[in-house]
Length: 143
Image (cartoon, rainbow, N blue to C red; front, side, top):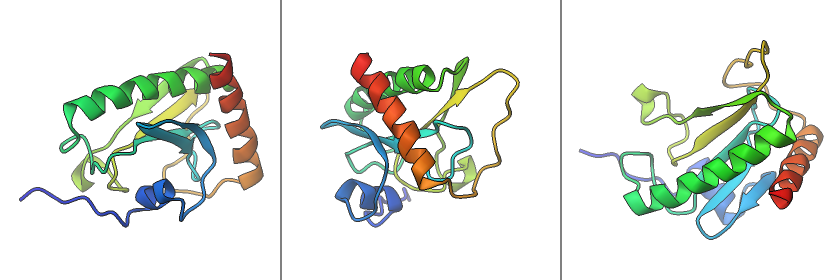
């Protein structure tokens, strides 16, 4: 039996505006915002506005529309953070490492020789996240 989408998940609450976020990108298709427990500086999440649990239930059209936004935000995050590269992560179902059951892509700007912090903590300083978000928004405006 396929798992169902839970419209009370944390990302659905961010989409509804009942939880705050540091938004870097938004249009009719997607929302990009800072991860509150970043593994690297500039760690951004990009999610569809459509209620999709993960890769298994998103429509091919919604996924195609979303991936272009993932690329656009990834380019901006890499530029804003002056990174050497970018790690893109996406997890599906608990066995695949998914923790929040709303489709999302992790965009992690990477610097040569700098390891990622462990997953799951700690919460980042909100002021720092706000400054990083502004740098990424500025890079998006310049794109």
